[in-house]
Amino acid sequence: MTAASQLITDKSSEIMDLWASRVKKNIPAANESSELALRNQLTNVLEDLADIMDRYDGKSDVDEYESYQEIIENSLEHGRHRATSSHYTIKQILEEYIIFHRVLTELLIEKDVYTKEVGIVLKYSIETAMFNSATSFSDSIQEMREKLIGTLAHDIRNPISSAYFALDIIRHNDDKDRLDNLKKMGLRSLNKAVELLEGLLDAIAVKAGEGISMNFEEIDILKEIRWVYNEAEEIYTNDFVFDSSVDEIKGVFDGTAIRRVIENLVTNAVKYGSRDTPITIRIEEDQDDVLIEVQNFGNPIAKQDQNDIFKFLNRGHENQNSTLDSWGMGLTLVKTVAQAHGGKVDVVSNEKEGTTFSIHLKKQANKPGKIRTELNYSKN
Image 1: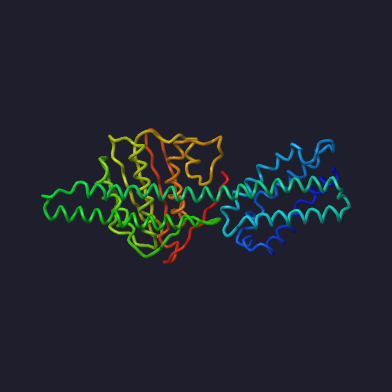
Image 2 (image 1 turned 60 degrees about the vertical axis):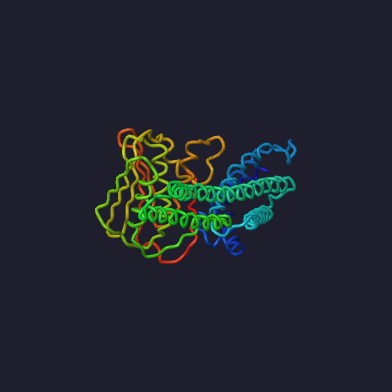
């Protein structure tokens, strides 16, 4: 068993190279990933396998050997990664492991270190990895779907509430101008709710590596941001400041998605911020980029939570934080939309400066048309 373990350790690069070439030949989705992303956690699974073989003493029942637990973490991580890689399916993940098993078996036989015991340990190790990767993949896809649906469902409440408010305050003796304004407010909010419902239906069909569908067009994005500002002033009792040194910012954007992003940040600012200080929406432009900031004062986000707040997939049950989860539902959307525009999102939060979410967007990162966004995986 030690000879097999040593061979796997010595030939790990060769094993992974052969595995990668066969996977690319047999699994279409593998060709969509970079070499580093393709190998992902499989290199660590291979190291785990060598360690299991090295320590197996031959006395324990191989199907109940506790050291198989070592391989679980990396195989779970492998499944989560594949869930954020385009076009993967459970079938393709299992095929990856079948190829992995065959490459190892062929090498061990060729070097004359394959025994019945080695074969059984190899079989149970890879079966354990297959089971956990497939489970993690399915759970992650379901989590993506639930988060996207949850975000959309959460966002639908605002326009429906606005429409309800417009209808509720209509009085039989209102003058024509007031009735027209309330009608416009209600129709605008209901149209927005219909847009979000279409996105909700779209999110139900999400697949591996996919996020929300977005529709890019040449627009003035400042107009969309000002729309959110005007609506926020109508809905909330907070004071708002709109700070922009330009009158228009044209580029290729998804206006609906940007509106939803700003609405989420404004809603969070109202929910978690102080009512005694204004919420500021600030916009800056240079030749190729747009910077949008939403700032509020109040209780800051803890320093240790500021990196975790944008994570898409779960952080593990032991790290669940209800405050982070509450923030994170909308921030999942914020990060996805920013990245789809070739940009990023940052947060600075402390007692002195308040909490500022900064969204960086590229004005010409996309061509006009509809696309399904991809989810960028990050273990950290």
